[in-house]
Length: 217
Ligand code: SAH
Image (cartoon, rainbow, N blue to C red):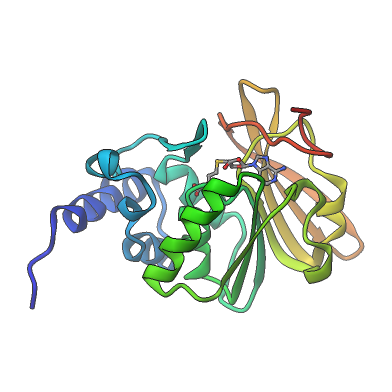
């Protein structure tokens, strides 16, 4: 048996101090966050800080969310293991990796080529084969693979893109930061019985969702 690395120890502390201590008790979500090596999704120079209670830079002016926010958004999807999930904003690939441990297949879309290329290498290294990715404007969704049981948008926009609501299965759940370019609220859309309900869970700060149904460049 090999002894735990500093990364393993820091990851376990992250679970206890940032997630459990703040009331996250869902065992499947906690287990996914215990399993995925967050430090592999950031540059070597900042790996030592990978398990801190804050967002991290991932290049191209983008950031990977604080672990607590990743957990909160994931929880909002109520995943049981059988779902198809669409993520807009692959970034480092960390959140897609978490989702891939909790559903059947993840479809992730990113507009910046450099980020997708790097994320794909990490998925391969970890053998997370149930993640497919593409380079595109994710605000139009992924029509050929719709509908999705869950949709998660990890960049902030002025409103929920209409194509994403259309590509949400019924029943289905969508989570996205909605608001201004400095601060947003996390909104959860629950689509069922021919209607949708929207609830708000937390104030957050995300980078811009840029695209046809987001902010203009
Ligand atoms: N989920 C990521 C964090 C992403 S940061 C992670 O776990 O690391 C938000 C990302 O959304 C950025 O990489 C940004 O380039 C991307 N993005 C912004 N607008 C987009 C759009 N219209 N379509 C796809 N990706 C977009």
